[in-house]
Amino acid sequence: MPTTDFSLIRHGQTEANIKGILQGHTNTQLDETGIRQAQCAAKRLIGEKFDLIFASDLDRALHTARIIVDQIGGEIIPTPKLREWHLGELENRPTKELWETYPQIMECFRTQQTEDIAVPGGETFFEFNKRIADYLDFLSKEYEGKRILLVTHGGVLRSVFQHITGGIVPDGRLLPLISNVSYSRFTRRDGLWQLCCWNDVYHLKDVGVRENVAF
Image 1 (tube, rainbow, N blue to C red):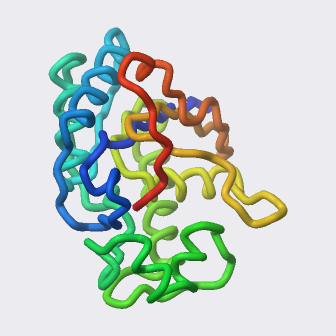
Image 2 (cartoon, one colour; image 1 turned 90 degrees about the horizontal axis):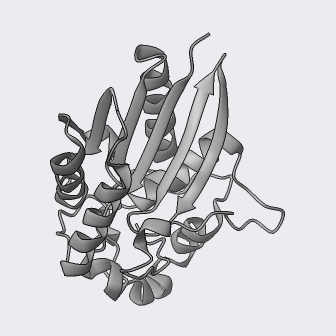
């Protein structure tokens, strides 16, 4: 059976990332550092050949993808399937405030709980994870044997990690850190997922890395 190869890039830094504001489906923009980070990712990917390039249709991911494509070529396929978790009434609000107002939901963000969590006006925990899992499964079957680049969001990457590995440690905290414009890679062959690398940020050594898992 052929191997389907996925490379993942998180979008570049936004002002909301720095301020600790949950973005969700809010259409925020890359800041100056985020643009430089995306340029570093583009340089890292020069020489890579992707059969397909998919990006979240939110501006911060699309802008990151466009910077990369300017260097490596290819056509971006925007899709709402790769959007961040839809956070409804929690969007555009600082995490400090949200810990006081929605402590159960914020704890869910921190720990990947097994019960479903309803987000007022948005997706539930299970709805979000199902959206991402179903789309990954679709891509791996529809484009079997292809090399695919995905440009997306921190919450999506957390969901990807959970789907392909299980992703939970004994104390309930999620294993991986997810930096802006980090590089990750995994494959699928014979119906099995294989994680190859996660949150590689070597290409950002001259820009600086700030670990950030906000949605």
